[in-house]
Image 1 (cartoon, rainbow, N blue to C red):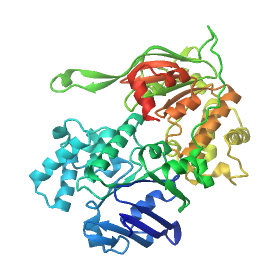
Image 2 (tube, rainbow, N blue to C red):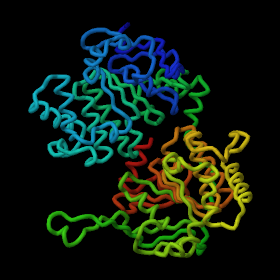
Image 3 (tube, helix red, strand yellow):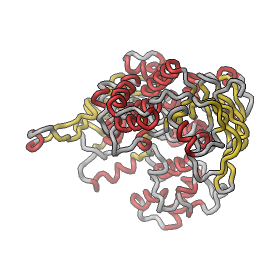
Image 4 (tube, helix red, strand yellow):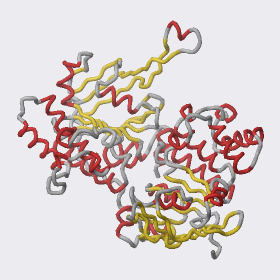
Length: 534
């Protein structure tokens, strides 16, 4: 195998006779960090799963020579029993979403102990002690207590660390990491990358990182393999490929960083704000422990003392980690949560009377993070986009409503010429980026003045993200829209926002014009966020 830990030749994977991975050739040397890059559907994850033969319904061919602890072997020709000895011991895998990959019925400790008992034959007591040490090695505080916790009792970052601990339990020679930081905040992403880097150097293992995050590739990998439509289109050292990409697809990925194209509108002194908050506070009731919980409830304060305003045609970006209060602030702005303090939309306050709120709901609309779950799978495109018209302009005829729906869809780049029978199609017939355009059209159709954008591009590939951001920028210029942009992506904030709020623990720790704040952050937490994004 010429000194390679893994040497893949002519790898092909097909489902139902349709080939989705076509003739891959790549190698990984012992201790090397390789990134497998491409958009969703390019075949990255299928490639990794096929190496461990975790796709029972797929037809896999080719060779995958691996230098394991028992000598050289072709992973694709081993029996299931032989392969079981390699999985977890010589080759381990970290999956993208730890909440779905971890068993919710067993504690974190039990799941790590099971690996150690099955693969290394340890007894219960030494396996538990080893599990606690693994959790400590991955930076989880109070590992003696956390080892007894169930997955739902841990934060996203803790769950990802627990999964890394499980993957490294047997000190594998090769780690397959499938989008290990996608579901995490930018600060946590940096921590997990540093953790993987340290553990990789400590144990001398090789890592195959599957990702579409180019910042992650620059920071972590030494070599990159670029995939498009099931084929490798380019591979080489990271510095060389990023500096001089040869293939058009590689160039499109590198050039997909969000570009700022917004009008720099001056704020006029005394001009009325479209959305204004003073001393905004949002709290949730929580049960108290012991007998006290029988007689009264406590309170968790999610947003405390928030002051901000959004003038017409401006974007206010809100950035912070999970649990910082970003989404709670957005829901309060939409009038969907009770709050105290002052909050006005277009000079009017939200009321507890939903009939009185109807006029305000036309002024402010929302685009959610996941375009698939936010669109009803049982409604057609015409019903989804036109729903707001039936509520706010019921006097329109069916023909007038259909014409407005078509105009809204055309405005976001979806036409009957591209998609015959567009109005009668369903969301599942569209890609992720196209579904997000449907969600934007649904928000636009009632002609709002303010749109709340809750992580509008975090579920999209980098090239699609850039297209959606360009669409939002164009719509803002043409319609003088205001945006309340909720995100954890510093690059999106740079591209879209005029002003930015930084939230931590429910409080605004820093605010100001986007360029000044991100180029010279004053608060340590803001500096952490900015540094983690570079």
